[in-house]
Image (cartoon, one colour):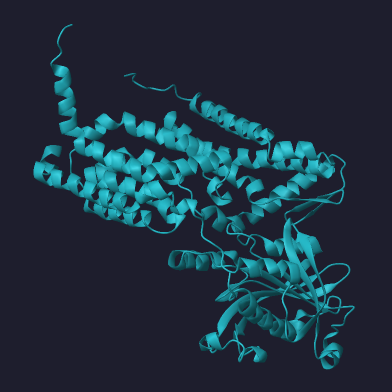
Length: 263
Length: 297
């Protein structure tokens, strides 16, 4: 009965021939790898701007509206983080309103990608663990970031890429209140990359996959955690506006200084 | 002394009859040999990424798949040569993925190409014959899925951290558990997804699948369900024990013992014991109620 279904010897032969032709084409295209050793799996995708990313750990980033009063490299769950204590430049009017003072500064935590296999993991959990925070008042906050226009002093400096200036990008962040026995913070966190940002590692993952497929390199990322001090067990809402402004500036600065440089 | 005219004749016949098969096999080896070497080397020397290491069960699964395909070769030959067009599409897709610049897509091209070949050369009957070896290859193909599911294992991590913390507290230690962190004597142990036994669970399920096939347990559906529920329970319990012991070592400053159990051969002994207990489990399930009615060949 099966015989009836079987095709003619001619069809069978051409089927086998087609198989060999397809396999042979692929073999011919890739066989030079045997000589050069340039197998895709032997040449991992590079991380652009690795020098700048490494620099973040050592010096942090320079913001134009915030002054860094202290910087050091700290370790959280085995990873190196840049820790920056920040106060606003025009301190007078902001201080009284927000209570951000040199003895009670805002804190910016940054963890840049350290090598090509370094992917976002459980950074938010790590920070929560090290701060021993109780977390509540959780919500998602979207930021609209203008890569250049938020930095007035940059526009004339970076003429070459000013064409990209009017292209704003959207960044998703998680915003919540984190408190322990000593301190209460309004916290904003996200993974930043050149074309966007999200608190979800899987969002970065798919952007990274697309970048690898198209440009054959990885999409470098920096984990950002902004901590704005608020009154003990106060409403995180009161600090949302300042967290958003700071968040926009951090993302814009990362795009300008870290994700766009050479190397 | 006695001339055997058959012999050169049979080689000739073999070449004639199997030339195309031999050519296809040779091309497949040229294409995928280096990739398989890369996988095995990566699994053995742990030079492959953490996500791809989750698939190290391929070290036993891939040879087993090859063996199964080989013992099915006569049945394969006997199948009518009635290919399916979708097989051709899969074959071409597989080759395009192979030529892509991404390791994960190249990896994925292996099971797709093999399935495509079965479908293209022998149709659905060919796939049905080879479905288990193909499944073994597919589930041993390194990909990024462990990275994507890691966030969803958080409840399991918290559960394991909680129970391990409770056990240590019962032993009279000063323990605090926060989320997935266990604090003992000012030292922290993080129950990471990898540590939470996701890798061991993958390996156990894969080995369980092979045992189910080997012992023909798959013919009794309830027992298969019981077996896999057992596997999951076993690996979760084993991981609670493992994390308790690790936290105990770390918290009490026994760093050498921690390293031995965490990265050293102590971890391998643990894995071997867990896999060994799977064999006992399948044996228990396979034995009691109805004696096998197998007609010995």
